[in-house]
Length: 234
Image (cartoon, rainbow, N blue to C red):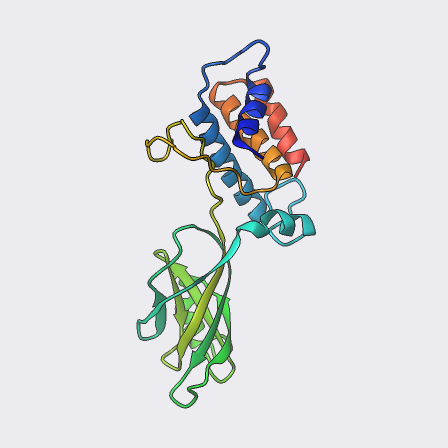
């Protein structure tokens, strides 16, 4: 969907084009509300805080809607003795999905496939001592944690992880409209950036942006109507 259509749809639902109510809302405000709305929608539906309580892969609809954000990043790891830590954590990271990795050791230079579970920082000491959960090259299992914008793969000095790949949901791309001021950088926008999502989702994001703007200008009727619309169409 073109950005010009998004502007028209938002103004139609919020400003009532025929009467030009609230005509002082600027295009950059609509852009900011749309970008915030799509992030809000993504977080809500990744976690399952919606009418049907569905998370990211609990239905084919969720898979279809969110698959465009699911991506991978190859990580460079450095040795921190009991674990290896990434040095190039992705800047567009939104939510964890899984980690895949191979491993090598002194006795086995051929990469071996590992199963990597996500652990909690609070339980690292217990996980390292637990014979059933501690890193094991023999069984091809270990755990990882995330902190300080870095991934830690624990090894107990038994092996070296290689080919570590982080699978994650990234932040959605912000739309931009040429001729406006980017509300995030304060710089003029020279090129249009359209939404990457399919049109039926863009319609939901329009409702989300109208809801945000209606709340900002204290238009409660439109706020309630758009809140109901976004949940009914989830």
